[in-house]
Length: 442
Image (cartoon, rainbow, N blue to C red; front, side, top):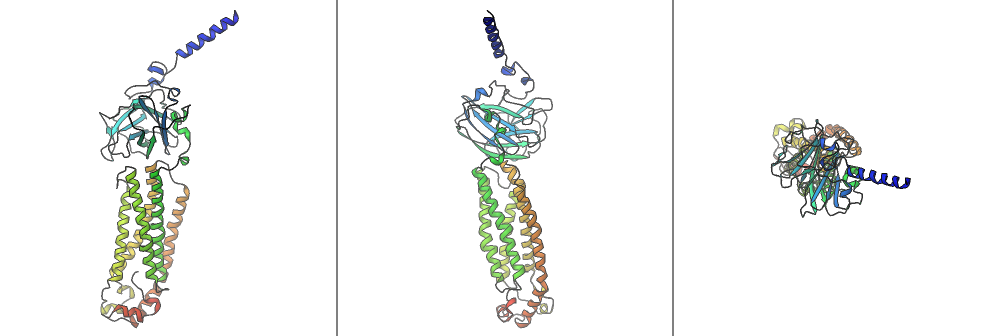
């Protein structure tokens, strides 16, 4: 008798607990009181999403996961906890321009705002009154508090099997209104999600994408690999080969008659192809990612620096092959006064090119990389190497300026032993001492 009563009590308890599920159906629990701004609330739990397909991607500040169901695709935006959360967003496409976006944030009133927007250019997106996919806020999977808050929404399923998405993370909390102004993001990224990938049976990594691990464990995407190779070629070309050619001209011009040949081989023959490959790879990376050319400081300065390099090469060739006839009075003056103005311009532009190269490389790894890939800052080693080289290189060049008096003496001797006013400069080089046959650049 006692055993029968105990069995009855257990059954009644199980039925009661199964009938009451907080937050489900939009009628129980506290969840519905903290969710606002969505079109509707779904009732699916994480267990109901198990066994479906989808994919996930993580940046430094946020992660995205896609879970494919029979009639819809659920997207979850989750903070990694690395930055203070203001708002998170994702868009369907490969570029900010004209990509339908879904923004979500927890307002100060305690609700969650879901805002569908679009931008026709790289400006703050505005509310899209008729989006191609209507997003529905997912009540059961959205958590507005904690160390890793997350916002979930669903859109109707279509035939897409591989979805390109953009994402952004901001640290300032907007107002509760759907059309509230938002401050600029601190991180953006692009990812390609495989919607046919089978998810694990538990579904935990899909519903909590930020728990899958750090961004350093995530393999590079094809676009990110192109960016890395672009960086290697440009760093080697602009900050190794170009400074090497500059130092060769500064140190060897008074010691070795073939200094100019070594100078142009390094500057044009070696640095040139390296720089061209690096710049082309950068352009390809922007194109493959669906980005906008010349849309960031790094990209604008990259094109300007590329043009400045070719201007410098053309100026060097002009100085070498086109020789102005020296004035008779100039030979009595200081050797520096006899050098044409374009020689000084060539020296200044060369130093300016190297200096801007330092700036460009730094914006590349400190700003462009985390902003474009969402993988966070590069390791501290890059900063250390940059600081060492930005100090060491000017010191080496300044030490080379100590050879200027010797250079001027050799050029004066070259003038006395060779060319006169209007005479062929080639004879000047033949008759002059071996150390002074080349004086094309400063």
